[in-house]
Image (cartoon, rainbow, N blue to C red; front, side):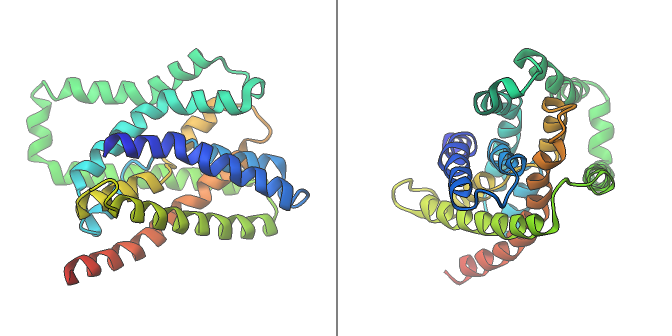
Length: 262
């Protein structure tokens, strides 16, 4: 399960969805979408899964929460190395920051806090956390909401760098892409070909179909710092986040009902 989810996130999405989709858009709508926005769509497909959302929606749909959590952590840890490598492959000289520097900056933002947390688990601080678990969970959720809110405020203050018509098109495209990918993945993971349990199929589908905002925006700001197209690169990530939450919640209730009726 874990291997299929990560292969789906880092191989199938960019090479089977991102490249064919952007190539088709360039041929069918050559003068409609700006080049930077199409590149932003390709960048989106290179990102790992969501940090918390896929876990919450997996639980709401009656899926395997432990498997979802494991893949969320694994995917975002791998994303520190794999996503910059994919972006270097696709964009090459357009990225001025050396690969090693990129990875080191991302490690400082992601791995260092995780390492500090692991060290604290071996100290009396762990007992303090266990005794106040609910309060810390609420704090975690508030911090995450604050990060997302800050990202949206910055984006709309500085501007997303796209026209209204482009925004509407992107909204429709990403909605269709998310629903389509979810349907295909759910059918695949439910098939006899992979032989997953229903709970595992739900977890795998949510993890593989999602793309992260919480990790994606810091990553893009690090890699494309100073790039005039940064806002357009971030736009698809900004759009997909609320769509995943809204559509994923609707799908979760439907899957839950079907599982209970079965």
